Every structure is written in C-alpha cells, then in structure tokens.
Image (cartoon, rainbow, N blue to C red; front, side):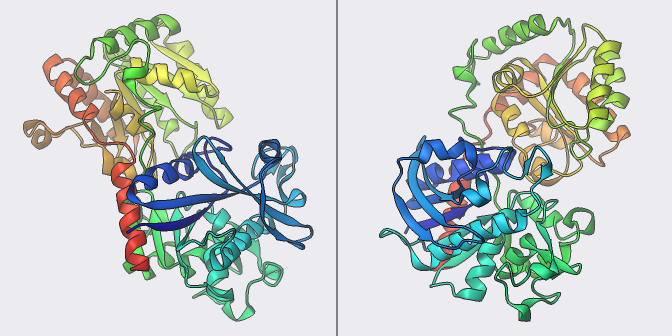
Length: 474
C-alpha cells in the first residue's frame, strides 16, 4: 500500500545525536522506503546544522513563531530526506540540543512546542506538493504535535507517538498553557494537566491515534508503577492502542565482515585475532572470557553493580574493558577497578566510535545490567558480533536475548545469559554462568553461532511500522 509519513524529532543521525533516539529517527526513512513509505524528518536547525542547509530551498514560512520568524528548508543528508526548521531565535545557540554552557535552556518547552506546531501544520496543510498521511512524533520533544492536530484540526492525518524513554517527560508550568497554544478546556487530569502543570509527553500520549514503544517488553512495563514514572495510568488507559516495535541496528555500519580482522558466522577465526589485538591494545592477559561494557556510566545502566561482581569474575579467569562516561562517582569506581586488577581490567572514560567497534569485534561477552532499558542497541551489537550478551531481563533486553537455561540449551536456541532481579546476587550468578559456559568450547561456539544468526537489522521493524501505518489509514 505505502504512503507518506512526517517524522518529527529533536535528533537524527548523522546530524545530531545524544542517544538512541537519533539512531532510530535516522534509520527509519531508509528502512521504510523498500516497503513503499516515503518518510521525511522534521528537525530543528541547530547552530551546527545551519551551514549545511544554507543553500537549501525554503518550502514553508511563518512570520511569528514564538517571538521570531520560522522557515522550513528541504534537503537530504546521507540519504535521509530532511526538513530543517530554521528559527534562529529558538535554535541558533551554543551547546547541544537541550542545554548550553549555563545548563538547560529555560525556554525548552517553547522551543519544542514550535517544532511540534510546525510539524502539525505541515501534516495538516502539506508543503510543496507533499502531504503526509501520518505524523510520527518522537518522545517529549515532539509530544505537542499530536495534541496540536487534535485541538487545531488534523486535516485527515493520523498521528503516532513513540516513547523512546519515558523518564524524560517535557514538563512545563500551567501558566504557559495559552502561550503554548493549548486550549484551557483540556487542562484536566484526563487530558493535558499533569501534576499541576503540563507534560508534552503526556499531551502526545492522550491525543495520538496510536502509541508505540521501542520494544514489546517496554510497552508492557510502562503500565507498571516501577517503570511508568507517573504515566503508567495514562499508558494503561490507552492500552488497546499501545504496541511495542523493536528497534534495529544499521547492519551496514555494524558488520563484523567489514572489521579488521574480518570475520562472520561461518568464518570466525578473525574474532580470535581481534581478541588478541584488543588484549594487546589494553595490556591485558585474560585466560577466561573477556567482557566489555560500552555504556553511559549511570545507575539506570546498573554500572554501580560492577564493583561488587567483577572481583569474583576476575578470580574465575575473566577480564573486563569499560568504555563510557557519566556519573563522576561511577567513573572513579571504574578507575579503581582497573587499578585493583591491572592486566585484567581496563577503563577508558569517554566515547570513541572506532574503539567501540574494536571492543565488540574482540570481546567474548558484553555486559548490560540495566535497571530499565526501553530497547537497547548494545546487546544487538553483541549478537551481531558473536559477543554474547549478559543482560538483565527488562524491556528490549528480554525481547532480544534468549537466556541460557537447561531448556534453551537443550533446544540449541540460547544466544546469551539473562538474569533477574537486577541486583548483585543475580548479576554475580550470571557472570558465574558465563565463566562455566566459556569452559565448554563446543557449547560456547554454538551460542556464538546462534547469536550471530539473530536478525537484528531494521527489516522486520520497518514492516511492523508499515503494517501499523496501513491499519491507521486503512
């Protein structure tokens, strides 16, 4: 069937990224094109993006977009069809998408309301001979877009909102209701009111025609208080129009056959060579499994559990390399681990894309002990590279990794190690199981082959989105 989709978001690879949201927004247009859907991405023209678009044609204008003119420029970057909202008074600022040298921008509610407003207007009216059938909003930054369609007219357009991380909700004080061009009659708990104020994410959740999350497991979790973060009742009330669609990874970028040394499922000798190079690079000698952590160093990611479980893992023969940054206390704890176990534990604070590829290529396992994980891409990179994931059973982690149990081992289906609950005891037991599996080379080879055979690309996810779009407009 096919059709047109306007994707409204605050981040998009390859232009701007602070997290996995950008990967999804950048990947979807290319993934949907083969199944007949023309998706274009509306993105703010942040300061760093404006030079790229200086010669792009103007396809839409508004004289007064919350205090200054706004115009939309159309172009394409690395195959992604883009619409950049050029409003210098809102986006031409030093720093990242949400904060500058002095911290979070105090007018973020208005900055992203403007993005949502323009997205809703383009969806309703079309531009330059192109009118979408679906408006697809991403997270709180685009949460007002479905609300503007609902309260100002939708022009026959259906709306979808995807929750990438419900922890970020876009709260604003109630006195901004009129400023944000939202109706006073909708300021009540069943609609826009949220703990005495306004949440752009809630606004999208109560007005969109459909709600998706980035994994089936996360969709179910969000109806529970421990995961819903205050919005569990809203999600549960809209249960019939909530579904989870797993993210995918870019299998062209994350491809072990393109690494050096190269390997794949049928010719894995290169992985052993990559492991040897990795140990040499970090000055490690590890007789057992070499594990990696590539992560933000935060409580959400379960990094605080590592100091309690890694000593026993090292005593059993294991080794660890950590790549990431985050909480200063956790960065210090990782450095302490490395100092305590020289030759077995190494740490690099920061992020290095090329190094992350070397880590996945050479490691035996990747540790993802998250307390909540909407989808997670790290474990998918691990599967793709035969780097067995050790994951907590939350969100997308449980949807993508088949834990090694007696039943799954007997069936030849296991692809990693899973544990629950997320605590020191369960995580320690998972690492003990990893050590035991590594001592059985034939079984380890089978697990690695299973992992590398898993479909982690965007094909099935794109088909799921296409099916959803078609049901909405059908």
